[in-house]
Image (cartoon, rainbow, N blue to C red; front, side):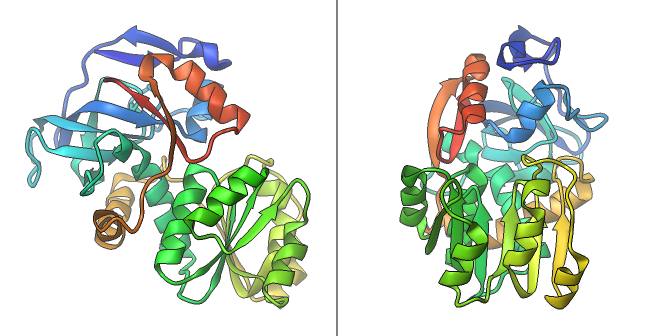
Length: 326
C-alpha cells in the first residue's frame, strides 16, 4: 500500500507518498480501505517533529479517515466487510489502508458520501468531549468559540445551536465571520480589529461566556478568564498561541470558574471508545437527520498532502481540508 511518510521532520515538502508494508487488522481491529482522510493541526506538528504518535500506533500522520471495511480482525462483532465507516485514529489516516480499533469506528451518516465523512471523527469527538462531556454546555448558555471558521469551530457552532445555546465566535476576516453566521453563530467578533472580551461583554450585558472553547492556549489565557461568566468553564484544546501564560487566580476564584485542558490523540483506547459511543448516541442522530453537517473547504489527492498542509498553515480555509485516495 501507499502512505504519506515523514523521512525527516520539516516543512510541507517533508511529506512523501511512499510504498509501505500493508496494514493488518489485529485483535479487536478492522482494516479500513481509506477513501479520504482530513488534515488537522496535530498533523502539522507531527510533520515538524513536535508531536509523535503514541507508542504502538501507526507512524503515518492522520487522525481521522473514512472508507470501507476490507477485513475484520479476531474478536470484532457488529461490523462486516463492505461497511462504510469513518474512524477516529491515533495515526495512519494518510494512507490507503489503516487498522482501527473497532470501538473507534462510526457508520457513515445517512445522506453523506463516504469522502465527506472523513471530516467528522476528530472534530466531533473533540467538540463533544470538551464542550458537552467536560464543560457541560446547557441550553440557554453562551459558548465562545475561538477560530469559529475552522473544522472544530464550524462543528462547535452547529452542535451548540442544536442543543439551544447561544454562540459567539472569533475569526480574522469578514468572509469567515459571515460563514459562521450562516451556520448559526449569534455574536461575530473579528479578532484582528476587536477585543473579544469587550465585544462579548457588550453582547451579553456584561455576563460573559458560560463555556469557552480555546485553541490558542497561553496567548488568550488571561483574557479568556476575564471573558468567562460566573461559574464559567474554559476548555483548552490547543496551543497555537504558546504554552506558557499568566493566570490571575483571584479572577478565577471570584468567578468560581474552571479550566480544563485535553488532547484526544494520546487518550487510552477505552476513553476513546467511550467518547465515540457518546458521539454515536448524541450526535449521529443529528447528522442522520441533516441538522448538522461537516463543512469541507476543499479536497486534494492524498499524494498532494504537502499542498494541503500549506493551505491549513496559511489559515485561508473554512472548515476541513480533505485528502482523497480516489
